[in-house]
Image (cartoon, rainbow, N blue to C red):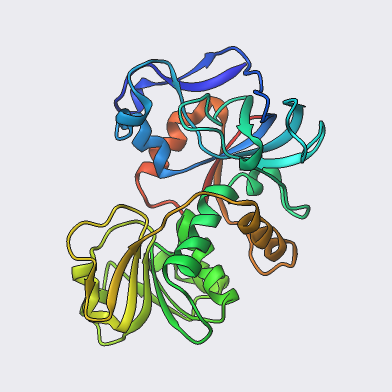
Length: 307
């Protein structure tokens, strides 16, 4: 089968599409014929070597962390899925990744695909969509009537966060390029701040939650525009101060769960949340897809089409 791999850490020049053995599912694993795989910042950070302590130096290392497709085989202990089921899944870190024609994933990291969206759209849910949900619901403790500011609102995680915040009944201020203003307003944003013209950290508005979906700011920068008990949420490890008075800084934590995926699946099937695909690349063009993701300027999600 074809898979996107690296044989050393580095830039996009180390990325290649290579013939690899098709994985065999373990007793508690599901083998998925990949139809589409979503590109996330973790993919090019893995390529760069930021996770070398976890992944080691044994190559080739296959890239890709989330996908959608059809079940073609199940391990003997798998009870929730059968051959032919349409699913989304997250392979184990260190195993063959989702940028491939086939991938094995643990049963607990495989979920039914929403019925009303494409495989390309469904491939974006386990990481990007659920990161947005956990950031606002769990780390931010979002409630109806809160004011939420979203940094990177037009991006892969951010565009989901706009919609999740509206589902919870919050007011949303989106921070993005001016060219993306109509896009984020179409997702439900109430206000838009063009970061090329205005620095929200110097403004007079106060927010109950600031979710920095692209990890461009720090708590110390944002605390002055938080309400007295406001929360700053980041997708990356937070350094420096974690609290000042009643204000706090928190990191998104945890991985995809069946309960969270069921919540997201229901909202998608109800039409309350939609997936915005910025561009779809062929598996063979993974280098170009990773390069676009690395600019951190993409609108919506970048997806690789495997079949």
